[in-house]
Image (cartoon, rainbow, N blue to C red):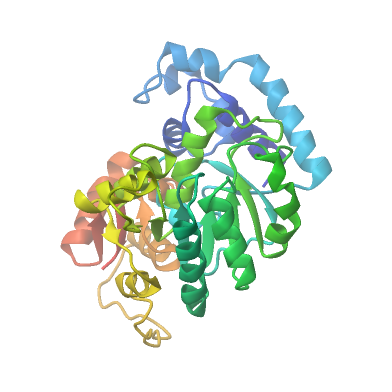
Length: 366
């Protein structure tokens, strides 16, 4: 990524009045992230959600210095990162409207494997939960999935260690910057995780593990995966928040049943009882639900389309053919088509049977 572009992304990240959704809206409407800070305030104010309060923070000169400092750290330490519109960005996460516009990476991460599952749960893990987690990862290792968790006490670290023991890639999603480690006792696992996967975070290198950061972290854990598995959880906790987020993304959620008298099974029982999670008794439940047991048919070398497309429609088709389902805003930005024009084009292509809409303003080829 060009220096000017990365500095602009960092400035957007640091802007207190702008979250990831609004940041993406700005980028889509202006056409390029670097152009956001060159555009006149009068024009930006016409974008829905951009008022005087947002503009004040957007052009806060303090953010320029902060972005420059973080940029220097990235350059000096050769930190890897992924921008949400680039191919290296995790595909599943790219489909989430509130996903981070920039992610920082450390280790040997490889997102080419589509079989990604998140395993989360209580920090106060019981022997029952530990045994189930270890056995589950051992069973599902035959399908070579990527195991994602949050590097915390209890279920998280158990999932990471089980993945390493079974030679699976594991991704630890952090609620702080790469210069921090929480909990500190888990420093001894850093090398093993980096060797078998790595760390992922949206936070800058000096960001501390604040309470609110863990809640933000949960959407990455839920969004990066095809399915989220809750091993054990009390009636309240971060794991249930992750489950709710996964459900909002239309991802599968699984929960391990336990005894009704067990405090750290009540959350799982509630999820299953309220049809917010599938009951999980073994790895085969996940395999069947995600169709991993179905042998993939050979893909045709070239897909023939007997419908004549104009130049603009061909750009949309080529994008969806290359990258799969995409958000409306992403299509607009990638194909440089204003939203008001794109909506009509997508409808016409849908009526002609070329593409189909999905939940959350997403589209894919029919």
